[in-house]
Length: 295
Ligand SMILES: O=C(O)CCC(=O)C(=O)O
Ligand SMILES: [Fe+2]
Image (tube, rainbow, N blue to C red; front, side):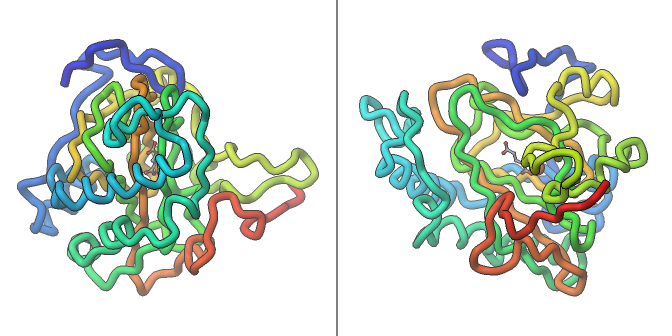
């Protein structure tokens, strides 16, 4: 895994020495073996499954994203659509533009293949969240370090995220990174993990939707927590899945193209569920989900 330029996350240069930065461990060989998958998940806080999906199906879904972005003027007219080069203007698109009537993405993220995988891993019937998080990451953008629990912790804590790239994602295009062994640091960050992205103190400050970020600086966070930032050059077809307390972020997009991915969630059907993400009209940071507290 070699980068052609310095790698940046949330605007900070990452230390790429082998003690600080490394490759995700593949669990591909253990794909059907629940005992080994659980063991790897317990050890690492994530499972990386290269080639989990049919590459052609993923690229078909990529095409659908790009057609829709193109229609909204979000792609640069001088380049082929599949190059996903972002237009210099922002090209405003809404969630509806991307998802309404889009059957390709739901048929992948709610596929029998994926739910059967989680049934095997978690040991029972699965309920996926209805909400699909869409990431169309523009040049210069990236995701700051966080855990998912503050965003989806109103039901069980035993929820798994599936991060799926729609296309090959080089280090420069910027895929997901996991902070090694961070799932073992839950005690240290327990106050953060108990927080809720949609809850705010009415008497202190106005609602802000960025409050569930753990740090704005992945480099200094790593220095404090130890471990390495782990990532890879993802390929269309790969799946990365992790639990609610694993610290993750992304590399910043240093290319001219969009980085396209989704993240979706899966839990045992028998356990309590976070109602924010269930139903036909879910939305991120929706006003109806906010809880104002005196604190
Ligand atoms: O794709 C990204 O940049 C962030 C994804 C993420 O935070 C997640 O999958 O939970
Ligand atoms: Fe996340």
